[in-house]
Image (cartoon, rainbow, N blue to C red):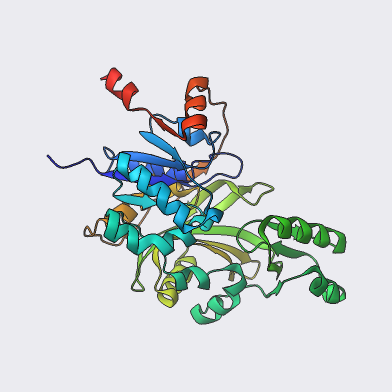
Length: 358
């Protein structure tokens, strides 16, 4: 009898700035891999996904990406000794750098497979590199400039026309309408994420997102587009609806062809009042709203696992338009004993509960 397939997923922080993990786990539970053993990889005992017993079989606390690839390797070695992992789906930008460094070693020494971008692909989609990517892919990108110190910014303060968007290298962005707001955002974001800080021309219009998968050879295997209907103060979509927009799909095809993208991605775009799409960001992994794509007919986490297992995959041809997601919050009640176990042991298994239930 063959061993049960084991898939590990990170990003279980289903809060006001949600990670993609819970949506990914929901998608896997509704896929051809619904009977797989699902492992949660978490950074805190306060991540709600840790306690979603219907989605995860076991959870492990992970070292922060800033601790480096060697620390990550040691932790994965321990986890793999207890739960032999077949596929990992990392869901944070900051995780990808150590996983990219370890990808070959994980495959050859532990048999763990990942479908993630190459180092070159990861770098080309950095916020600071978007103008060059836009030129290569023939996609409009708002003009921007990288700043490596407050002194650089002060030298050019009089040239700036508001509103502007102040962005961190990896995360966080703020729309600013005057110098005081710009200085405040620059200081706050640089303290959190370092330099460079990107200051970008603000484009007014309607925000759209697209989730997709590239095959690593320039072909688009999956794509679902969504118009944001409600956006939080952190820039997160709290409601959105699937749409049919051929020009937007063409943007995705040009992006994948220009980068030869491997794996999942999300494009964040602004459709200006003249109808042109402007690329604002490229996220190198599935987004938190990926379950909307699953509900619309394209299960992207399932597709990623199939690619990792080298199963035959065919490009999705369509999806349901008019599917709407509305994100909401609720109070999750958990046993303090579970919280305490995860806090102390850095792992929590629900195997005993499932055995007793049977």
